[in-house]
Image (cartoon, rainbow, N blue to C red):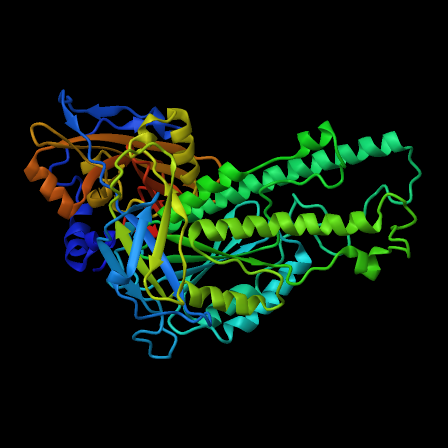
Length: 610
């Protein structure tokens, strides 16, 4: 039984009809909105609200998806398991598997690299979408090169290894490449062409992290070495140094978590499993204050990110993403055995009695334990696999792709309908002996209505952060938009007609049979000369109250939304966004808009720029 894809909404028939609808001044049945003008935040828009009924029935059905990798005693994939051989439980209670499918990376393989091609013809230049229409039904692979948490010497090693790996890129395995610096950047969208990927890597410069000590790499040097300091002064200096390092890690963790959340939103709209191969040197969950031996100072410096990482892991698993961390450092020894570190025979460095042999080895061990522990935890939480303490990074990437490309998908509707936010442990077993299973450990049973109950400013700040054209697009909520040039019919304003995937929206039903949803559509305008601060933001809230016939119609055509922009002649970058106000599902896309002077030709169009 195959899992239904949200992309079914955008079939060839649908797109053919929708494109023509998007290019007229108003969609059929769309009432004239009262447009909201929000210069900085979309929450300043006004609402068009239909009178509510006294009784509203909430729809809270939730399908839980669990991808399972099965291997034999030799570590080879087991490909012939049947549905009745699986037993799935949630918190010890057996669940009925209602969705079952198997994905084999070798099935229907021709042995030749296949391009990831669009199923449908290219959209007109004045129609944009955040839907990626790829002729690919299997898993997708994403390579995240982490420069923020990786020293430059290790980045160089990673690049060399990956260039060699691309010579043996598995056939028909689309790969996208992202870079994490001070922000997340898309370097290459999905392709299975090794030449394109190799060119990206060869032109990629190492990123010097501003939030890492000794970012260039090599043995660490401390400015206190060789100085004669009284013990109390030295203790305070070390304490200050530890606090500074802890603050740097705080910032790196915040940026990294934000990037992983962004990736989850970017990949959420792609059907099926996504394998995130995260090549990184270090992202600690807990900062171990190894330079402060004991006392209150150590307690102040110790920070834990367990809850933040758990929340991010849940967001990744909801998007059906498995994380495969790969340690960029390969095999690691203590600086004690590095001649460039200048340790003497006693284990002291540069004549300083503070850097003893045991302390040096403890420092390395603690750092590796924290980094690898974090990688292992994220891999286990999402059903992936961690690779570290090895010198074949390219082979680790290959194994990640192979491991995540042959799997079983099990889906069930939990018997426990109490959405209390607690973690629920999933367990999968098979009756066949000698089979090892890997899958995500569980999920948080979040209230479907929790997003609507959160602080409005926090919700809007989260949405606003996605409305930057430099942030990778979000695909959690699919939409298309037609952009019309100013004309006499539109009072010389630019018109944007949205069509939002209604099948992904959260609807409630009242006792009269009407279906209700709350959606926001936003257009944020930037100068093409250099997107920085937005020039203008137009937002519009829809509180839909639909009788059965209208509900059936928008399930086929999409929920319409319309905004207008009053802009002078010029070149602009538009960031389009839609949000389900109940669930927090979001979608974004970029477009370029050219408004000519009155004396110029009005035939210039809008170009899509994902």
